[in-house]
Image (tube, rainbow, N blue to C red; front, side, top):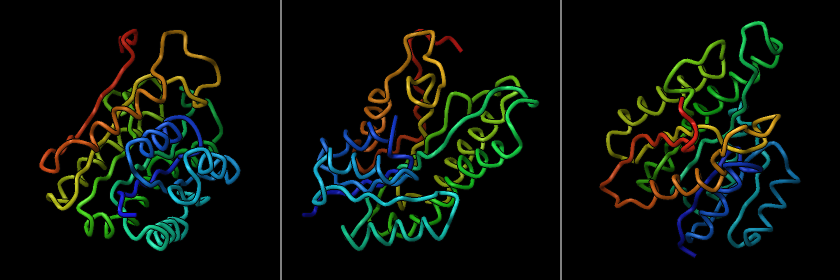
Length: 228
């Protein structure tokens, strides 16, 4: 098989899982990474099994683990065409909320984890002339009251633009910035009609499917009912 290969971190649920399904439907093979081995294996089987999907349990805050992820992808499929640095989680607003340990884990996952994914995959993406996608957020476009999570997503947005400039056309870079999405990210269901994970996956695939000379740098996508 010579179909393109799409690597996704944070692939076990939500946006990552929806994007994996959409990518396979669009003709990609997928490499699925997350901490949850059972969920990854279940998703890999769901989308077509070993011929089209490779599940690699990965802690994105461990650079050696990300290097092993890329090595496994190249050993199985021989190439990487699209990388979706999607792993991340949030925290309650308020600088007296959550524990310092929760903050540390969030910053390491959302910021350093994304940077590690970039570093680990750049050589393969240069070889393929591929596409790197980062999950930021509406919260990465404007500061939210008391939100350290917002600060991490500002960092991701800046990372995406810095990478685009460094890539200098060798591969494409897109930062996707969803508003409220109905995923396990939220403890309570959204009070408005939120985006579905599939809506964000559709936007990701739209960017990937643009002609090679078109580099969609940012996609800001909100539910119609979300004003801010």
